[in-house]
Image 1 (cartoon, protein in one colour):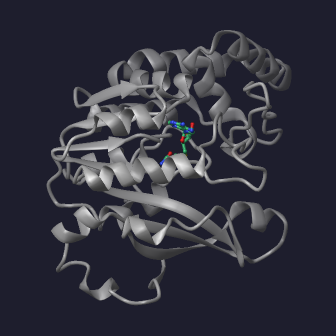
Image 2 (tube, rainbow, N blue to C red):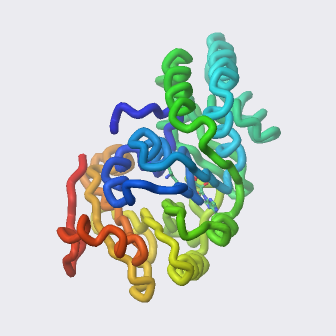
Amino acid sequence: MSNLPHPIQYQGSKRNLAAFILGFFPDKIDRLVEPFSGTASISIAASAKQYAQRFWLNDLNQPLIELLQLIIDDPYEIADAYANIWEEQHFDSISHYFEIRTRFNQTNDPKLFLYLLARCVKGSVRYNSEGLFNQSPDKRRKGTVPATMSKNITGVSSLLKGKCHFTAWDYRKVLAAVQKTDLVYLDPPYQGVCGNRDSRYLAGIDFDEFVLALESLNNRGIRFVISYDGKLGNKTFGQILPERLALKRIEIEVGRSSQSTLLGRSEKTIESLYLSPNLIQDKLIDLSSYRREQPRQLTLV
Ligand SMILES: C[S@@+](CC[C@H](N)C(=O)[O-])C[C@H]1O[C@@H](n2cnc3c(N)ncnc32)[C@H](O)[C@@H]1O
């Protein structure tokens, strides 16, 4: 699936894990719901594999959802806007970036956001405590060239145009509205070391509220898959989801994190995938090889 289009780099993107994650989805999904859609990498992959024809993309980060909507519904408009902004940087690329960043923080314009995502350090967003985008420009690269960006944008649009519903709600409102025929893929922000706040995302979530929302999905017979509690080396981010939720955990070894590579360490990142009881019932046969006391480890990269 590595040849799938991807206009936006994003911290926590599941693009490289998509093929593995999709392996636990039912073959035919009436509607795939992503309450924490980020860059929608799982919906893009699910559409390419023709697992689903209808998608609900939600993320609390409104400019991000507006950007996704532009990419999917108006690909030429956003590709042209990107090319225009990108061309402007030639005289003084660094001050141009800071100008765009100031304008974005004043307006939340998704077109400016695309340029910042393409041009900032390692494509990783950072927010300050007031919710303002504060990542610096990459001093060595100028950001994706417009022709490549345009190809990626039109690629995503051709996979998802006319099939998506977009919202920028809190995930709990989405979960309250999902139905039995949906499959819900949840990829919440990791719980950072400092409570609910994680500068990599605009917002964090409360663990207990998250558990309550999952309990309600179970009680309503809704099928879901969660990516959760990443581990770096022997350090775990986030609390383990409680046993009463009756989830099946699968661990995926995804190779060295970019952070530890930067620091010259060789720690491995482990990602856990949790399958809901209603989904396991549907996928009994396929899951037989994962039925162990200890989660099975898989090396993907
Ligand atoms: C790990 S990222 C999702 C990455 C995504 N799967 C991808 O492949 O790009 C988590 C996302 O949750 C969003 N988020 C944080 N708090 C939220 C909330 N309360 N409700 C909805 N979305 C939220 C963040 O803005 C972020 O985009």
